[in-house]
Image (cartoon, rainbow, N blue to C red):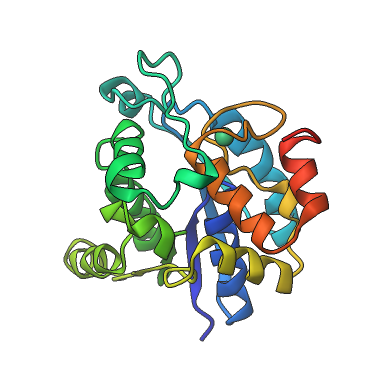
Length: 235
Ligand SMILES: [Zn+2]
């Protein structure tokens, strides 16, 4: 029987490639959940999620969690007192000094734990056997809620709290961003329809940590035209 999947979908590189790989391996993409928890990029993520959903023929549902934005101090949130940390491409591998500090500033309390459990409620109701995420090797280095250990632990917990007992997984868990862009190219995904930036806007800001990670990966894969379209000609 074909397995059905619900996807935590932000229109970013990782979740988009994860769902494309899941589909390639025979999973049926039943539902994409797009969250608005007061993050600056919420509107851009929703706009691009709709573009990508048409590409994948993926039904979408948008869920608002305004209280989550209200209880967090994160720099990701609209109206935050903190400035969004800027991390250059050259600083991306300075984990001890730069990216751990950046990760602290964009931390949202229990975000991935919460979103997985919301997806699990849909899975339990509609019989979806898989919950797809965009967890990946590069961000697992600084975000513990991006690791395979967390996905496995969440799966074990859901075996107690659901009847369907869905499996939490990411099809890009063991890949870094260069490899993920490589898979996107192989699958001929519309890279310019992604939204990976922590900020809102028409174009990616090109200065936040997430933009720098995408920049480095696009440069490594020689995606010059996509790079210009995503970040602008003078980026
Ligand atoms: Zn950005």
